[in-house]
Length: 86
Image 1 (cartoon, rainbow, N blue to C red):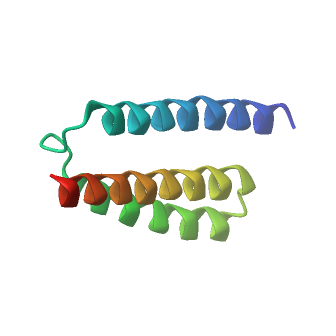
Image 2: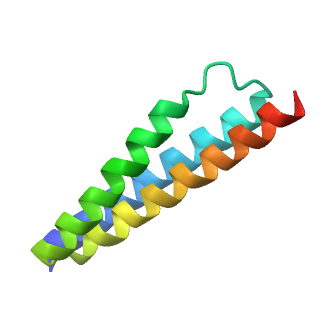
């Protein structure tokens, strides 16, 4: 169980960091530095890691990678919206 707590703590730090970065990019008002391929790669890797983690029976990593996938989708949506407005 202590190992799971370490995993959940890492999840919290990672998601907080990714969320802050998405917010900062959104507030910056420019999408020039936002790579579509970064999001595509992140989403693909997340889906693969979700499948792998599920097969390995690791709830911590299933949840973590699902949250990472959600941050990638939200980041991409915000970038696309910003591009259409510019």
